[in-house]
Amino acid sequence: MRYSVIIEKGRESGYVTVCPILRGCVSQGATKEEAMKNIKEAMEAYIEALIEDGIPVPIEIGKDIVELEIVAR
Image 1 (spheres, rainbow, N blue to C red):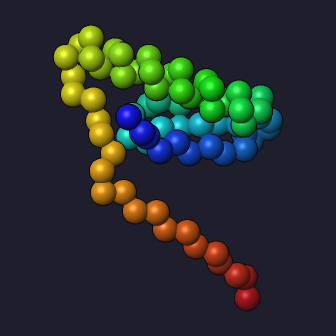
Image 2 (tube, rainbow, N blue to C red; image 1 turned 90 degrees about the horizontal axis):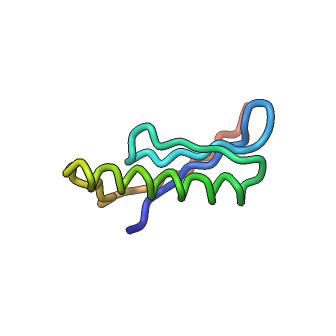
């Protein structure tokens, strides 16, 4: 399975990662690499829990991405 992940610089330090389709699945790390490793582990645990509980696993389909560049006047 493939899922989108958002990675952002933390407010004070490190990086925060979120998998939007897996509600509440968030992780963090001191580096981008660590944050991505941690979110992957969190996503795997999240999906395993869904399967164990008999809950359908969300699938990302029909996703579009929009990038904007705003120039201040």
